[in-house]
Image (cartoon, rainbow, N blue to C red; front, side):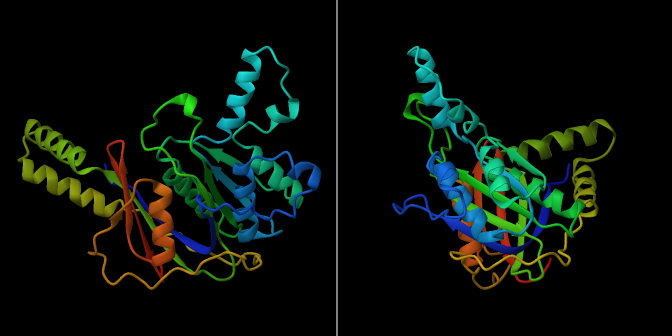
Length: 292
């Protein structure tokens, strides 16, 4: 099976670092709603608004844990026999941020929420790409926000560090193109090739021929590149960073990071290839000024 890879046209992006102590400015949210929001929702709304402003856009929200801390507080209250606030419950669901964002902007565009363990951000990029490729004239906004789980859950493998990233697809101007690739990790890849060789021999083909056939299929099955068409332009983001220069060569090794968000942010900030490996898979990101 060929490794999935796709290219995203990036019109604008914004981020919020996990280590910052400053409170995000979300003045576009009504005070009565704003004071009920968690830190996670606040940083997610901040980067989302920086990217798209009040322009209508479909939203894909992604988070590994979501409002798990709020949910944990609710469970503790139930365990202690205390009443649970209906507002707290309504804001504990994974798609709470998309609802608040849409209501504040009067935007009835479609919104979805994704959680996929340590690979959440990677699969959110795939979902965003698919939505944009289906309807390129309509902007799509990816918002990723996360925070470490409550210590009550113990040690979590490949735990997130926190922070938020937003990427807008579509618009009149494209800053560059983000190339995303998901493949089996080195050990997993060798196992797959060995299995394919055995299957080839069982069918009367030499192992080398089976591998060649697999390579040919991979090359022929590469998905087409999505290109952005004219869409309503969004206001300039206040904390949007401009990606660095185009990577010198595709052979340059990708720097590996502990989390997907760290890897993606490094690629957006520097234009250099970055990667994350875990759960038997390797995710890689590269930046190009032009579509590839």
